[in-house]
Length: 606
Image 1 (tube, rainbow, N blue to C red):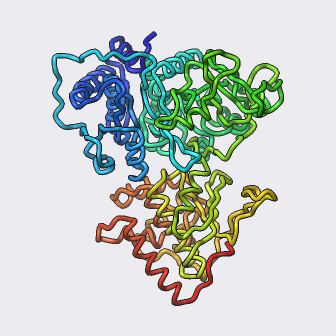
Image 2: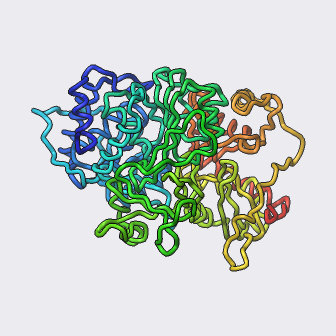
Image 3: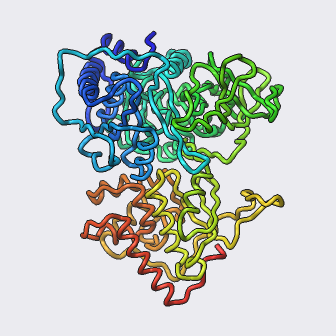
């Protein structure tokens, strides 16, 4: 078996050159086409300075060019740094700066999203194909990719994963998915999420095809949805797909990951789809995608476990004194083995805190996951929660401390807290300065905060709702009492309902009504999408539908700037070409002046 990700793909391309490798709305690539395009691009990247130990950023939209780019970077011996073009510019700039990336690969469509500083190679420009690809020595210990995760210090941290860990993961996938149909593996995860590695390479290294889509919620819109036989999905997204009756018809294998899985959803997946295998997969980024994968039986009962640790994975359930816990007793999960990451990029102290010596294996390290689990009597792991304030939302790992650091960094905020409730991220703030003195209205303050965060954080880390408090609840010891944070108040109405009136408002109401199952004429143009029952998954679909309807690119961050139909319609009808942030800032300043003249009370009660 090959000892690197790209060599495993190349071997497969030689075996089946004419087989389809990638399906996407932008077209289909065979193995030979994908192999040749990535080989030619690798030559150019080497000429531009790529090579062993050199991180190369990939800022490419979700087209076949994305897979060409990943394979090309790996073939040079470099490691790839995924840079989602939809991420805020500040976030992308930090990742490039922190990782020391000096070369970024992009396309004309994503060029504007590239951070300033590094040299840029644009796909589509002339690529010289020389006499042949020069062999680049790559060993299993070389870094294959760097993925940035949310950080408890308020800064994201890059996890460096090596080829050897990836190859070990793929070998385990061979064992788990033996007999499964890999002819159409869905690739709907952002490349900034490590499940994307399994989605792409479990297919390409074994002769299957990747069905590339924007996200899982866009799967029903894909022209190749009927090619999907193997679906990787987080539970919350699966519920949405089932609710919409939008699961591809040929799906036979469903792999859940990224969130706790409940038996109720397993039963529903078996009952409402053609799937004959449903798996529960678990693993932190630091352990290379998955540490355990459990086939959940169709006729079982009780909540699914995480399964037994994968072969080669060392799993320990330890107490606070690093002593093993007996079966049935909760403790923190520590993992070790060939998939363990090198550590965090430029974070020696954090690396030393999380990657600690394994007391049971001389000279080996183990990773403190922060997950609370217990071994069952038959050696499987049962999830029991978190030992810290890390949460999962749509499969993305979020450190609440990072969200709180960004909230408190807003000039209008004195203190803040964040929690996840009903699959929504809720922010709690104690206003500061002018906000407490009544210059801002609640609506203007919420818009100011969410617009600022949308410019700094990925959309899954922007609170859906901001709750204003006079003070944060504290436990007797003086620490924040998260359990005492109140439920978000029901949306208040400042007056009679305002029905959609302009053509743009009417068109938006039709889209909202379709997504929220509401009568369009009954939607108040001043009601926020989240207040009407929307969530982050529906927000992604809303951006897609608006882009199609208005022939204008609408991003999820734009929907944080304009949260109701009235403001959205004003932005869409604005012919000035102003950026959402500029339009929002001008309207907020005007709103603040009006509020001050009216003498509105400070938003300290909610």
